[in-house]
Image (cartoon, rainbow, N blue to C red; front, side):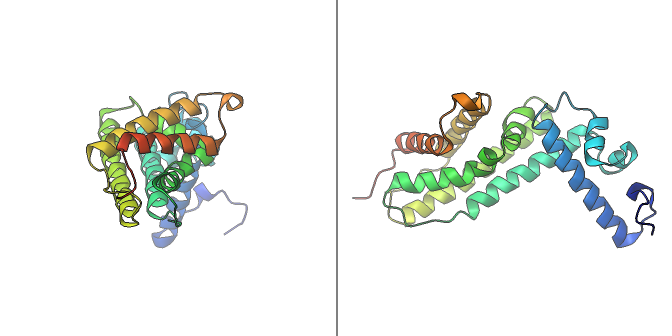
Length: 216
């Protein structure tokens, strides 16, 4: 194969084609994160995504039916990253419930605070796109609530709180934290509190809302 031959013009078969398709998907998802997370989903064209990913429009439609499908895939990937961060969080010995909750908040919001494009895609750009994506968002919220329930069970098992809040409590928490994150993202960086302070404020609200207190 000539090294300067355009990738999209090479005839691939079997495993090689699968590798090519995976690479093109990755580039399209990276381009979508950049464009949807900065200029917005509705302001982005297929042509712009393809330019950013360095693939042809024909290649795009071989992999995705439309931009809605690409957005949905990106949404899945980003949510899985958040869930993985919650599951893999390092549970350090904490002196009290607030410290433990701060660890949880830092893990859950970490991917979105570190890269605000992800926060915009997850919490802003997917809203109102389609009924299918709306259903997906509700399912994802339940998955997040289950992850939060499990985290609180860990905190209770460590003896830092009497009992782990769960169910409706976690759903309400996620809704409130989502809105707080959106407000932060839409506020000019110069007018925001430092990230560590934001995490602490969220953790304090969670402790007050859940009534978590030390055992005894």
